[in-house]
Amino acid sequence: MKKIENKTFGGERPLFGAHDICIEGITITDGESGIKCCNNIECHNSKFYGKYPWWHVNGSLITNCYFAPESRSAIWYSDNMVMKDCTIDGPKFFREMKNLELENVSINDADETFWKVDGLKLKNVKLHDGTYPFMFSKNIFVDGLESDSKYVFQYCHNVEVHHAHITTKDSFWECENVTVYDSELNGEYLAWHSKNIKLVRCHISGEQPLCYMDHVTLEDCTFDPGCDRAFEDCSNIDAHIKGAITNIKNPISGRIEADRIGSITYTEFAKAPKEACEIIDKSK
Image (tube, rainbow, N blue to C red):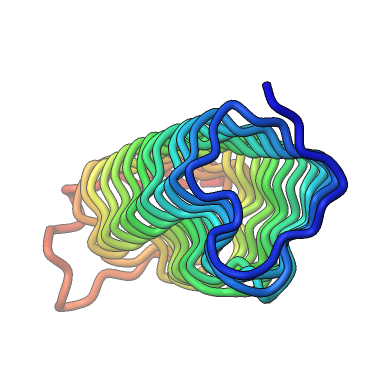
């Protein structure tokens, strides 16, 4: 590989069309599209300040780099990428991509990040601020995620999450085929309008969780006392809850078992009779 070291680039497209290069200690300043339409690029210990610095790149490794707030929409349309030990302060990263892997990366403005990504692997990643990360993405594997961004994981398919701490409302909306293990899911309206959702050893907080769903499975999950009106209009429920759940409202079908159930509500708007969903309070 050709090596480029300790240089500063500005203006338009300074490294357009480069291939088979290793970049070390460079700075991309003002201008646009510093690295574009490239193949087989390694980049280490570098800084990016200009807009759209990494578009249409196939095959890249990025380590120990910094992306400033000005580097918005920095990495789009770039397949087969690995990024490690980086800090990102710009919004709207990673869009329309395939086979993207991040490890030990902090994203401090996660607004509209990870849109339409197919094949996403995250390990020890932090997301802060912003809205709608992961929208329309699929085939996602996560091991270690801290996020306080709003509305995470909407319209996603085929998602597996381990060891996450997510604080937001409206997470996992309109999703299909999602499994979450050993995680904390904090925020109201969890996983509404989703199908084939499985939560294993998770702690759930926030009002009205798990409503308007089809095929939802819980194994050894716990609920915060503020979780009221759970499972409204849910069908095909298989829920094994550790400890207490405050309130269950208008479930359609399936089985819910908990150590203690505060109350069960059926209103005139229930879509199925009480007998259609088996509810077991183990304290009685």
